[in-house]
Length: 274
Image (cartoon, rainbow, N blue to C red):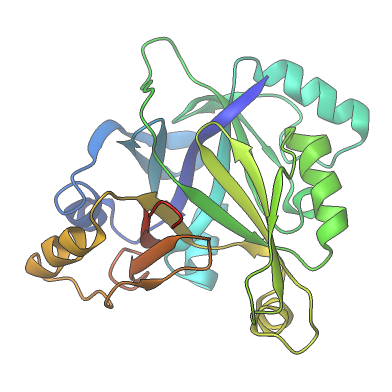
């Protein structure tokens, strides 16, 4: 059973340099740090509530991760979902005819892992992981939401429901933005499907230019956005002033991907509706 997002993985030039941000500035705790020789990467997991962020640094140049970094730069690489039985999930997906990268599980940083081909997930590389005994577990909220841009909203809804078991439970259509946000809960996080509803909207142009993909961003809920913005500015980061967000009753400010090793960190504060 898939019950939550385990982690998002980002590819970086230097894990040590990235730790200067994620560990030393954001204050996240390292839960795993080792080289996976067969994959040619150094992987670092950092805990954020029930979720984690994975840093992937290539240790040699003849791997898929190294080629990804060379072609795309530092950015989000994959989304990993936690399951108590990765073998059973693979068998289920094979029975559905879903295209896989891994026909059988293998050992990875997050435990026994396997990847679904991006072609089967509207351009998103999805990992499934069954963590080992003693791995990080938390009941605290981690990510507030992740976003995935899709060209065919209805087809993507069906794909995510069939392959991962996530269902759209709410739709938001921000006024004047020509888009729909389909919200799919996964643990305490929401995976958002972003699609254009008007052909000349900014979202339509974004999808036309970039294609379907997971946005290289995580949103984290904060209780006092102004205080957090001030805190990170004092640490030398540049953040915009808080402004109304696309989600109802929200204000946001974002640590840009350029400052966060390819993964933008959106700080989001929710207020009670008046």
